[in-house]
Length: 218
Image (cartoon, rainbow, N blue to C red; front, side, top):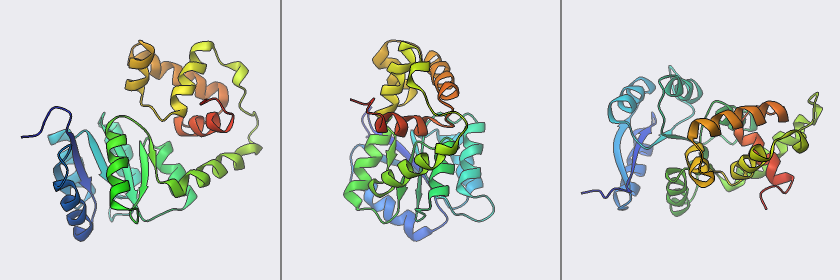
């Protein structure tokens, strides 16, 4: 019988062998429980709606509908859980596209099993998770945007927006930020929207990476 803090996980991946490996890994853990597996995006969307998992592990490259399109559809369907891309692709454009589409993390399939379990636990707690090898790639992608018309300016933010930006730099979800700052999740969403517009950044992940680069996470 799972206890209350068990993270319920759904995996959407078209490779049966990969799904089996993840399932066997999760079976050994008391705090991570598989509630469904899907070999197609369509089946995954159905199971997500039916079983409402806490976290979805989503493959990027699948036939008929790729991971990005599936991710967007999940968000369109108002799935509120965590969605982590699990893929072999370490291409910069794939990482950036997934995070901009609303992914809560991006993990590579060649990662160590113990590291993967750690990252899944962090994701379930509401933290952004990215494979270590991709952190520098993401930072470089942001540096390459220096040609943007307006460079981010921390002084354009209100005190509250600065506080929320620091929490984003720690990888916290809106729910955790709301809890930490004792405000509503809806208020956090509004502040995040405003600070992204002011900083001329396209996603909370870009904001987090920029904040870390600027030393705002300290």
